[in-house]
Image 1: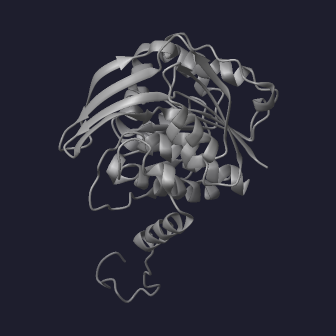
Image 2 (image 1 turned 180 degrees about the vertical axis):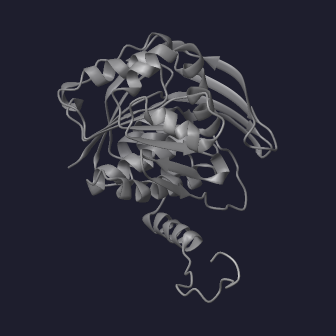
Length: 318
């Protein structure tokens, strides 16, 4: 069976949106990514850290999704990473209210022996120092190394981030982070600059407007599925990354063409996450729901264009 190793945070989130407030719910990049990947036929292994306050029901949830937590450190006398944030009517606008790193502040992971030869390594949003340490503990290079990062690391640990970028295959960031990292002001120019930094592939996410996939000589755009309502966007990017990696590992095809399908798979799973607070919606999906939404995506982008030239003016464009 193919193996995916995910390193990232497990957390408590407290989210407020125009639709309501969540209270403390399961969050963290590793939680969303692992649950998304669990809908594919592969072995999922998580490297993270939690405090003694991390609820047994969440361990049970991961277990029910066949997610291995051997790589999760539990510090009984300390607290789990906690984040509180508020979204406004424009869900692209978010304000961080509280960030308590707690156990995450001193996270220095040791990769279990059974995790050291994965097919795919997903470095979810964390300090680039931690991400680099995990890469160097692998016994052999994974078939695909995927990195997610954010503006905070670009601003505070750019040198360390640049070191990690030289080690990876695929980077996923949003459009504003792409502009910040590249120093460019258009998507295409930003992509070209970032691909010079090391990764073979780049995905630039544009939230409700979809995502763009780049290689040095190819580009692909995937729209976002139009939903009646967005309840809460927290975790959508992490879900996207987990779904993408799950699809890639299961299909065992690491080409640009297959990445296009993986982008759709990640987008499908992310579209469920935004329908509820935390991991609630993501944790209880049915295969029929996923397949129906994939069909919705296919229908969204499918069209036939006339192959004849008679529709164009014969007086222009000669």
